[in-house]
Structure formats: structure tokens, C-alpha cells
Image (cartoon, rainbow, N blue to C red; front, side):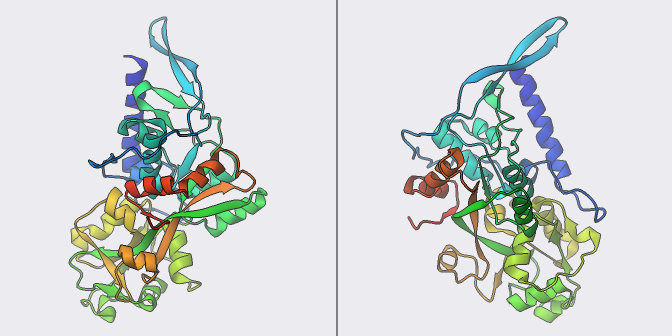
Length: 367
């Protein structure tokens, strides 16, 4: 078996393990948050659309030199080289699960990669781990080019993350390490509330949502629904969606301590439990609209309007939808002229915003 097949097999095993591990529920309040990576929370195929276009020309961002990284034993007294490659002028990226397709599109545009190689290079560790990697100048060590069995330099620190806003703990870590975070919004999205499609409730007010998650409203009949208890699911601390829930929605209103079974590890797990037929429409949870539109679709859920307004593109651009949010490009302060800073500047250019739009996001710039 040659090196390329071995590496492909190892990657497949990793992704399968991530898929099963990432969808579990917390069994106790001390469990370490899921670190299997973003691919464990993606069920849809990430590939270029039929109308895909090459947008970038004369890119200044390129990978470095290939080198022999080590040797595999392929038989008795037989070895075969395997390879590494430097990042060159291309940044080492990490980020939130919702940003994986964006990173894959960047690899297609700048590096000329196939969908397979663009995906294998876009190995994100999810929001909290990405912030830790950036702040502590650690590497995203899982990236590789699958078709050639080549590993990206696992000693090169993360240069840029594409993520939701940092949590209080992440900001505290940055302060402790003496790191300033430079955050720039690169596209819009909506933070949305989901329930089972058979639930007759179609819209909630902000006050109703806050009272549900504060434990003051406990029955759907209190918000115009059936006489059924509300099962309000939360995400784990420091996940991107939990940070948004605290900052964007609760705004200082204390959330009720959830029963441990209602803290869900991974966004895919939350969507599955809300969509489960047996719950008879009693569940509510939260996520990002792009996530359920592109990365983890489920026909048994529906998105609730907030204050009577849906998270349409028009309502996001105008800010009319109450929980309009953004994804950010984040670098370390003082590195604006380094690879990460230059790439972030490109992301905010017309060309960069067009690439973000082609990946299915609502670009921050109105094109």
C-alpha cells in the first residue's frame, strides 16, 4: 500500500471518528468540549457549484517548497518517503465550522486546488480551539493535500482565523498572553432559533426567547403553541453559538442552568435532537442560518421568525432582523503586514468579497 493510500485511509478514519464523537450529548458538566474538529459537524458535501468561476488572477498567496518530512514502513525493510510543504505566503487558517466552505473556496481560487484537496486543507478545529491556536501562536496541525499525501507544515502557527465573535474567556486569554485581537467582519449571517417543523409556533419575541432560556416560560402554550413543555437546548461554553446566545440574545439576562442532557456537543447534535420526530415539537435550539442552509440540513426543523421578521437577506442587510450577526477575519495585532494581515485585507477587497459570495455567504460589501 503506497503512502497516498495510507494517508487517505488515516484521514477517512479521522473524519468518521469525528462524525460520531461530535454529535454526542454531555453526560456531565465536567466533560471537555469536543475537539474532533469541524468536519465532525458537517453532513453535506462541500464542492464548487455548477456556475463556479475563477475569480482570482495573479494571486500573491502561494504555498512554499515541498520537502521530505519522514518515511513510512511499507514492508519488511522497505520504506517510502512522505512529504511536507511550507505555507509560503499563504496563511495558516483555522476557524469556526461555518467558515469551512469559505476556506475551501479560497484554496480553489488561490492554489488551484480540486474540491478534494481544498477540503482536506480546510481542517478547522471549531471556534474556541481556533481562538486558542491564534492567541497562543499554535499550529493547526491537521491540514494536508490529500491527492499528493502532503502534510502542511505542522510547526507554522495559525496566522488568521475565520470565526464568530470571541467569548469573554477567549478575550481574557488574549489579555493574559499579551495579544491584541484585530477582528474585521467579512460577511453577514443570522443567529436563528429552530424548532420541529410540526410546532405551530412560527415567531417569538425577544422577551419570550429570553424568558424561555431563563426558565420563566416553560410551556409552549405561553407563547401561542400547544400545551406541551418546552425543552430548551443549549450549546457548550465557549462554542461560537453559545457566545452569540449570551451576548446577542440574553444581554445579561442569566440563562437557566440546563439539565445536563440538554447541553449538546456540536451543532450537528443540536439540530438532530431538535429535529427528532419523537420530541413532538417540544424542543427549541439555536444555530447560524448558513450552517443549516449549507452544512447540516434537516427537513424536520424550521426557523422561527423573531419579532415577526424572518432572517432574509434584505432583513440582514438592513439590520431589521434582530439577531443579525457576522463572521470575522481575526489576526494578532501587529501582524497587519504579515501573511494573515495581508490575506484579511484581500478578503475585504472586491475580489475577496466576490469569492465569499461564491462560497454561499452574504458578503459584508454590497456587490
